[in-house]
Amino acid sequence: MDVSRETSPDEIEPEPAAAALIFGERIELARSFADALGRHGEERGLIGPLEPPRLWSRHILNSAVIAPLFSGRVGDVGSGAGLPGLVLAIARPDVEWVLIEPMERRVAWLSEQVEELGLDNVEVLRARAEDWKRGPSLDAVTARAVSALRTLVPITAPLVGDGGELILLKGSAAANEIEAAEKQIRKFKLTNARVEVVGEGLLEEPSRVIRATVR
Image 1 (cartoon, rainbow, N blue to C red):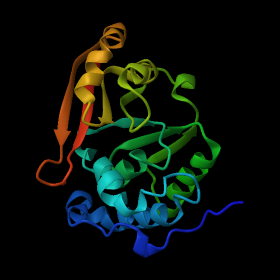
Image 2 (cartoon, helix red, strand yellow):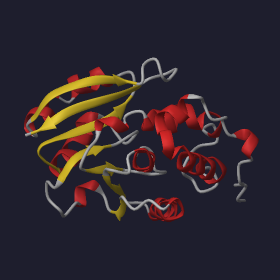
Image 3 (tube, rainbow, N blue to C red):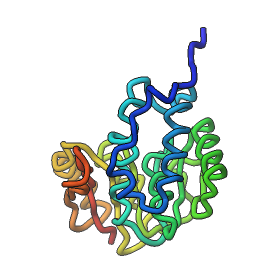
Image 4 (cartoon, one colour):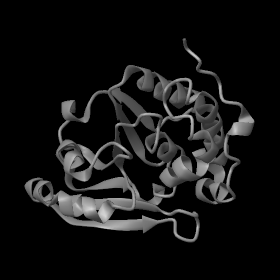
């Protein structure tokens, strides 16, 4: 029996004060996205039942705080519910975003949100990163909660042009992931692979990214 339901507003985490600082004049779009994902994310299989009470702090702001790291044309591999791609597209309207997602129901959600939010800087592409046909044409690639770095490098680095970057959201074990991916980092000629912490003093739990340059 299908017991999915719309999540009520009082089950969704209240907006933290940092949200307005991070999103600035784009805060209303961020609120609209948070409301839609909070209410419909579980019933549509985008987020788990434990996520609405920590939606802002654990997911939306965790994604948005890294927005200043990007420029040009950026791919988000495995965009899923739009974390981080849609959130970053809201925060950075001056950057072009390609949301790469293979699952049809998630692509439908992403496309709906792009239309409802009026985002003209986003392309939703139904594909696996492994099936990318456009060559090394992106300035950067990001991903969040997709897979370990040693698995991500072979499917993300080929999308990025010379001198572009991988900027991947990771958890507290990010440094260990770099060590475990040494073989792939050498094979795909990545340089300056390191962990950066973003949002200290702004978020209770700052975000961590693995950054590396593609050569």
